[in-house]
Structures are given as structure tokens and as C-alpha cells.
Image 1: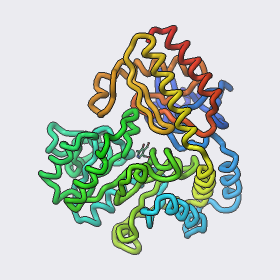
Image 2: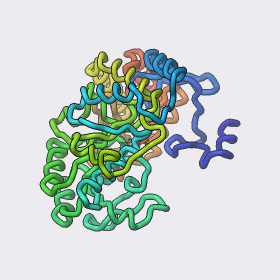
Image 3: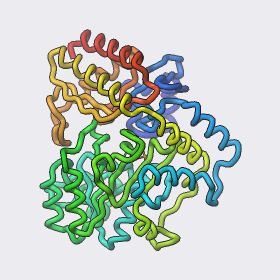
Image 4: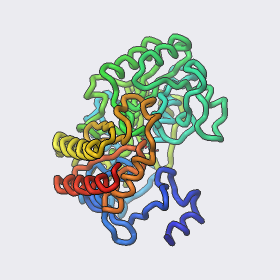
Length: 419
Ligand SMILES: Cc1ncc(COP(=O)(O)O)c(C=O)c1O
């Protein structure tokens, strides 16, 4: 593959983000429309990866394309405030009223990094608690996994992260309230915040147990710590608003990303006015960005959120359930266990295991079992998330025919392989 050979000479592993790489080589895409994406050889795929989540309206949605083209011809970056940032922020506050003030960033990574700084600066405490298996972007405070025991500090999951950094992060177990209780009993007065994905979306899909998130919030607040929900994936995914509002939990800081940029680079962190006013220049906690709230992203985000307000999320969920249960059913029919987790338009199936309720349940999962289905579906024109530890997404542009075609392909590839 010529393009990949060239890419390998230019980028580490030939890619600009590791999850894009898979054997024997990643596929280069050149265009997309609706539920379909087309590669550089002209082959079309039904796309359930959707740019790793932003494209809930599908590829090249006309309202977003129009907004981007119009804005790009007018003004791209200003180094000044612009009206569009005010408009998008107002729309977001309408949907998430507890996000009274916010800051736009260019990625989810930036937003979680700045949210952690805000929590530390506000509380005057250094420790942060994260959950094993939750992902908050690729900055140093996110790439930390659990150490030898629960009450030891986390260890870096990548070289290049100093122990001075990992020593400020403690790692709890998602869906295990005892693990967070223990950490808070030991060092609650030094903990600035707990950050987590309310629904895990970077370890396949793992749903929170009843009352778990409420209990985490209570434990954090009893110790004067802040609760940070990373809704980069879940924001505007299940309805026109946050996941937190569907379960009646109000985090102190909410992180958004992906969907709110309509496919353009974006992130956001926000919370009460009182808290957010600690950010510079109204406060002394520093945060900045040349491209933050750039007008093109803002225009795309406004178009996306306006469109989403009119969409039928119930229908979207029904289609996703049909697809997810269809694929996992085929695997079970072939004589193998297969856990399947889904919520709204997000789903993942785990061939070879009976249930995945916690991150630890992933240890018997053999990534190549999923990957072999991924590869064979790819050949038949279906593009799933490239790893069992990622999430498949459905968009409003997927039709019942797309689902039927996908299930037909899944039936063939699973039947013919015995997996
Ligand atoms: C939950 C979550 N938080 C943060 C991020 C980082 O966002 P970005 O890739 O825009 O930096 C991601 C990325 O997938 C994510 O899934």
C-alpha cells in the first residue's frame, strides 16, 4: 500500500493517533456522506466508528458543511472574542443549565487537563482520583494506571511521565464503591477531585451500576472534593444534554468534546459561575489557547446542536439495540459466549466472555477474537470500531437498511468462520 509506506516514513507507525493503526495496514479514507465512508480505492463502508464518536449526525451533514464553508470564508481565527462562541455557549448552557460558565478548548485532552488544574487550584489540594480503564485524553495525569495496591499512588502507563506526576494520581475501580471509599478514608483531605467517564467508553462500553455515580459524588463532596464527569463521549449522545442529567447527578465540572464541535476539533470544561470564575483572567488559575473557540468550530457546533435538537434519540437507540443484539446473537448462535453492552447509540460486543460489568471483567477478553470479526466485516463493507476496547457508534444517518445489511454481513462472516 503506497500511501501507508509514505505515511510510515512520515509518522510514527504511519499514523497520527495510535488507535488508527491496525494490521496489516490502516485504511485511508477520502470521503464520507451520511452513514457511509469511502476509501482511497473507492470502496464504500457502513461506518460505525464515525471518527471515534463526533459524527452523531453522520458524515458531511449538509447543515454543518454549509456552516463550516460559510464561516471559513469569513473568519477562521481571531485572537479576539467572537459572537459565535457566545452563541454556542448559550446553546450548551440551555441544554446543561448547571454549566453556568465554561471554556472552550481544542480537544477533550486539553479540557480534562485544565479541569484537573482548576480542581487543584480551587481546592488547594494536589491529589486526583481516576478510575482504572477510564480515558481522559493523552496528557500526563490521564495516562496513569493502578499501582501495586489500591492505596498506593498510580504508575505511569507510558514512559515519559515523571513519578512526581503519577504520585499525585490515585486509581480506583469503576463500579466498585468500596475502592473509592478506601481511598477517601485514607487521604480524603488531600483529594482535589474525582474524574471519571460516567459511562466507560474506552474499555468497550461499560455501564454504571445503579446509584454508583451518585455514591461517588457523595463520597467526594463529603471530603470537600470536586466531582468531574468526563462527558466527551456521552454529552449529547443519549438526548439533547448530558448523561448526568438522565441520572440526576450534578457534577461540579463537566467536560464535553466530540459532538459539540460538529466534527471540528473541540473540547469544553465548565461548571458553576463561582467555580469557573477562578479561571484567569477573572481568577488566577491559568488556562489559554490560540485556537480556542475558533469561529469555524463554533459555527459547526451551533449547526450540529441545532440539528440534534430535532432528532429522534429513541429511534436511534432502537436501531442500535437491534444491531448490537443481532451481532452478539449471531456469535452466540455459533456456539460461543458473547457479552454485549449498549446504551443509546453506543455498543460493544465481547466475543468469548459472558459478561462485562467491570473493567476487571475484560481480562479474559482476547482482542484478536473481536479483531478477526472486525477484519472480515471490513472486507464485506462494514467499518466497526477497530478494537474491542473502543466503542461502536450509530448516527442519525444510519437507516434500517444499513442495519439489515450489516446484520446480513455479520451473519455470513460469523457463520463461515465458526467464531
Ligand atoms: C472520555 C474521553 N475523554 C477525553 C478524550 C480526549 O479527547 P480528544 O481526543 O479530543 O483529546 C477522549 C477521546 O477519545 C475520551 O473518549
